[in-house]
Length: 251
Image (cartoon, rainbow, N blue to C red; front, side, top):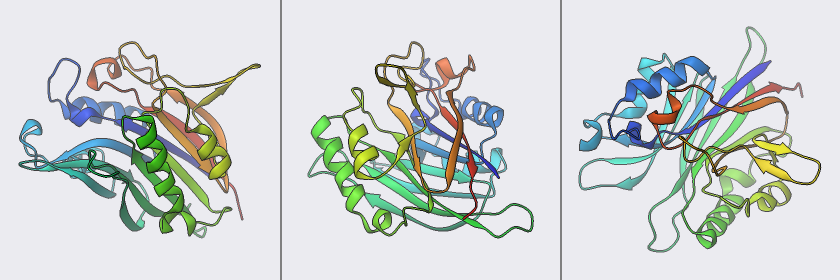
């Protein structure tokens, strides 16, 4: 069975032209038609985004029957965080607090998704949708929190698992931790003869850094991964979406 995953920091649907236009985000997501969408910087009840519940609005606009929102930051009015949209039922969800000290609140949304194909028995897919901090030490400590969390340690190494989102990892310093420490592979890396390079996603108008990534392990085979090449993505957000196609392997 094939499965398409997309991760996208939507910048609260406020584009580089400073316009709040969620329909642009919806158009991009509709074009790529992913089975599971990992979103970061998703507002809920915030005046700058017309007080919309953006996770709910996008799920309804795009006919995703299942969604979950993990709110990290509370504002004077409203809040924002990560959201996961799914074509398949979400069996459980929890927001893992990755906040370090008195720094800006950060989180990782964990969803367990039951994936079925016709009459075939469901596969369980464990999805971790995160948005890490701005400093290298903060990101290292946040990754350690995720590695030691019960939500992650309870996932069997053979179970299909996705860890994706905005890692803010300009220099790929976290790659060894996710690959060696967590036993993951990076779908959004490009292997060359001499080095590994991430797909560049930021800034959207002229990408120089691979901040947005998709890691995976378990019963998943990577088919392909790419950054969106739609012209609209150059202005709709300050990040580009990453799309990865997988095959779910039988147990």
